[in-house]
Image 1 (cartoon, rainbow, N blue to C red):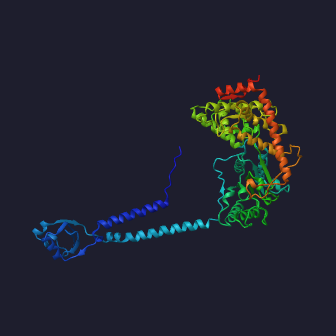
Image 2: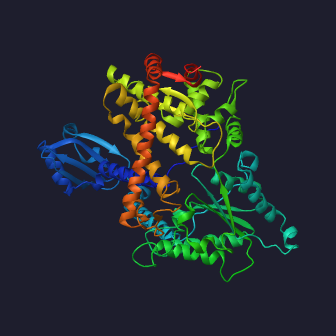
Image 3: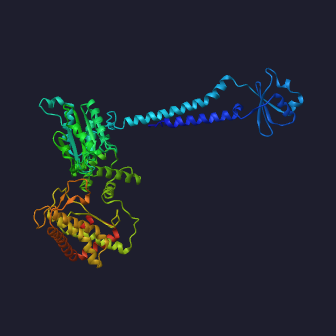
Length: 600
């Protein structure tokens, strides 16, 4: 068992030492009479006070010094004759009136200690202030230094065996690793080492994981840094950090530099307002110069990752800078099975578990999503005090990640539950009876997230191209709930708002982006190249007002045609829809097999 040793804070220890010294100094000052305010009197006056019984408390004898207090709370001291005893000087009556207390005389060393305490405290204070100033100066001097972390080879490393899927991406990166390990093999053929490798892919597809695998496979120094770590509020700091990073890399060449989220500094120059002298653009200019400047022959490979290649500056993407662009796609069904197997290696899975079935239920999921599914399944199994993860745990975790957690605490009225049931069955029935729609996987009226019910479709295979008929069928299935509410209850509710929004968006893209209308094979509207502008203003209008009205009319035509087709299907199958909806009110969930049984 590893025990963690807590390292004390040096600053707090130093302050504690000063406080203790101050407390001790105050204590000695309080207890030592030499530090109290006293008045010197003659020995005769001391005897007169004894005779008048004016002395209060004890009389302190320290060597030849006699200290006492009077009843009016004043302190006095006097000196007796050297080498004489107080019993010889005072008579018996005087000694009887007072209480004598004898203490050893202060030595030279004790006096020196009391005198040195203030001096020591002052020295310690100035020493503390000096160290603070020195630390601040050191931080100021290192402000322009790079914060890149070098990969520790002694720790557990990631290899290409730990990366499932992304076969083509791994092949590209394996060439880079081989180039670094055996450079002579390529130099004999006149091949030059690539300057940069850009990993492009959606969030969660494994770009950073691939970079860690390269670090584990390559027997060379590996520096990792995030693009946001270059940018500061002071102009010139980012460029200074870039220079320092490449200086370190050249000293350790051949080596690899990995910049995660490079779009933080690599956006197109001149895309904003206020000129081109801001901090981000200076940092980008320095990266461009270091990657392909006047200095040649450095064996430094720059790897970068981004999920927004469209906003990167063209100078970054030209040959000589990022020579290779490795696209990391979302995994297909085969890769999803392999990824689930990788993330299930250290988890106790039940025998006979079918990861292929889970892979089939997760089209469009990334590697991060699949890792989250395995983790949620492990949490669910542990919550139920199970010793192994079952197939049911995995299926429940898929639903939780894809649709959101169940909200059984959200109580609906009987009328709302009935409307929700008919609404969801309307989606499922229309989608099932239109061949171009994906098969129905599950119907539920248990609230998940913001939805009161869910109809879950699952494609039988991964799709890369979508036909016009596919979109028309999807429009009908989206309007199935709206039409079911209208036919069975005589009015529609707000539950169909998100369906109508999605249907309108699909119809608009069919007209403006995919050329699926009789307006011709034309794309209406184009994305603005000025990345400074926001998403809402990022589309330029490249068509007339007359064409805009035609586009709106064509969008309405697509939606209305789907509405009429959906209405005819629901009216024709009204008894079947009512039967399934009433059963759903009782069961709350209907699986694919149970749903298909109604039509057999």
